[in-house]
Image (cartoon, rainbow, N blue to C red; front, side):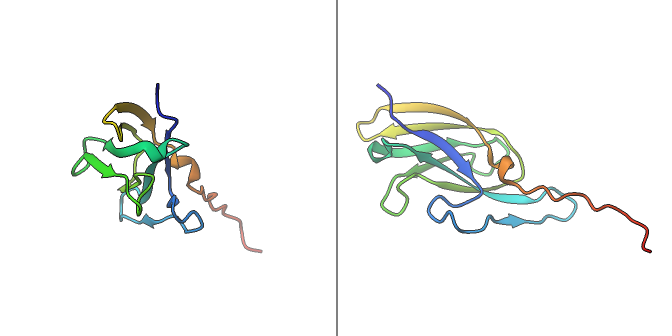
Length: 122
């Protein structure tokens, strides 16, 4: 039997979806985006913790988040410029572990600004 949960990611904070996404410009580099990775589903109540395995280029690429009243979805916020796959080990309250593989999808939330079109002034 598995848990009825999924791993999600978003530029919006799951605890404040009305808030604006956060971005940091980097001169000469791709911008950094604040991405929230979290658990969702009917069985989140039975989760003890989630261990996120980020891309190896991160400082502390393995991070464990315990479920709490202040963080009921085991949300992890990271600053990143790239899309990669996150491995998540979820431990339920009985100690059983479940592995999820989640390709980040926040890229679909980034607004693409149309390129400027040069026109001769009349």
